[in-house]
Length: 27
Image (cartoon, one colour):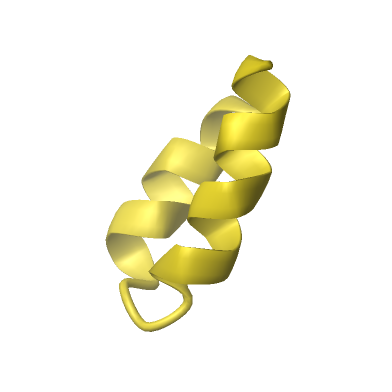
């Protein structure tokens, strides 16, 4: 989910939750 990277930058407050999802996508 490439948008996760952009979303992570925008929503730094939820960075923790989004970062976990991004890591999962990267595998």
